Image (tube, rainbow, N blue to C red; front, side, top):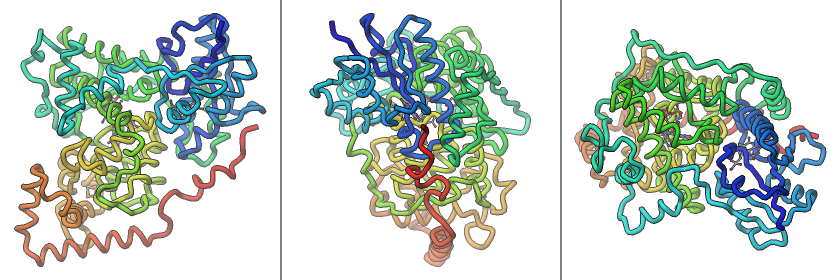
Length: 527
Ligand code: FAD
Ligand code: DLZ
Ligand code: SF4
């Protein structure tokens, strides 16, 4: 009888995982904490702590269920600190004759594993069915289409799953209620406070280990409050359904100067590491609608993010990699501004979005897209630098979801696969959707001069410098019309304002990754 090593990766913490299915009684399950995965980009301490704490808890759950589990800890003397090497070392140690693993969340690992399928100790790769669709389903849907668009993919998934459907028609008569979902916040709103999760000994030790071995990475474990067990994740799910969902739609695009979570679910990290399934999350939201406790615009908007966007970006990732990661259609070359690592900027919207990221390893979608993302787009930050930042700083970041959002949606570097036009906006948009500008030293109403909001001149400068690639886009026609009608004198003043700002951005002290997060190889190696 074959004796497999069942490798479970840090984002595969689900009892329904294909790797665990049909496991023979002699199988050895392996979970491996390895320094390489925490350092290939300088992950936020909350993210490292989350993976370590959740993996340690999951190992206990598996032992309780009767599995034989080997757990490689970060401080084990014989730990090789590489996922591939560690699995092969353990397979030999336990006399296993194959390694079984479910498709990982990153192409680089998938590629290494695939290359070993015919090795003396062969790797067997299983499809991940914890999603609504597989990469093959997506490829099949995309085949022969001139343009890939979320809306059509999403409608097909609604029909396929029956979520929010009445026979063949969408409940309420419309597929999409986005026009009801654009309200800014107002001072009278109160937001649901997140559940505070207790920290048992396992969690406390995992957080201590993260802080000890990865000292200098962004964040502090003092503010850690992510769910690390399925039970805690279910508490978060139920809390969101009861207290957040009904207002999720209306305020989905709003930004607050003081509140990081608003009516967002903050369920992405738990879903991405496998503590919650997207099926149960969507079903819980749908049931709340049928119980008359949340309006259709909120429930449809929420389900679209998971059944639509989450599946769509995953399909794009697996069908476009590895070339997708090299895309840079707007030819951006700028390094990431240093303040992305420490929030030291006088632009209030950026300062708040980055500080909230440092505090919580979280920012909601509109902060990621329209504040940090929009600014990087307007400045022409190179995709590699921006993608590494998003992958490092957010607890929910796995490359299959981070890369299409950053490279595609934010930087429009894929020529429009993710979005039909770039999400570029001036200070006027941020002023409309947030209360940041009233606390800012700049004015969103001014275009030039010392008080002018940098987003304003950068916006027109971006349109002008990328006109060759963008001005034939039908969705940009209106805005290029406005640019064409602008008097040359005004255009020149805006150009100078933007270029002066960009010069300062490139010449100020250090750009790119700050010293304390560089040179991982010289850091203490856990022993
Ligand atoms: P909610 O607003 O409550 O939305 C519900 C769920 O919908 C999320 O939990 C998530 O699973 C899903 N979802 C929403 N928007 C998207 C989207 N655009 N793509 C895929 N799923 C989506 N999401 C990640 O999970 N990991 C990432 O690494 C990631 N990187 C991003 C980088 C950029 C530049 C941008 C613009 C977006 C990124 N997103 C990422 C998508 C989105 O911002 C997060 O999923 C969301 O902010 C997580 O918070 P939440 O759980 O409160 O989401
Ligand atoms: C992000 C991360 C971190 C910080 N640590 C680990 C780890 O120690 N072990 C592990 O299996 N995975 C970790 N991960 C997630 C990986 O970088 C990678 O994204 C997934 O394993 C791919 O499925
Ligand atoms: Fe941001 Fe400009 Fe508003 Fe300041 S004025 S908060 S920089 S949009």
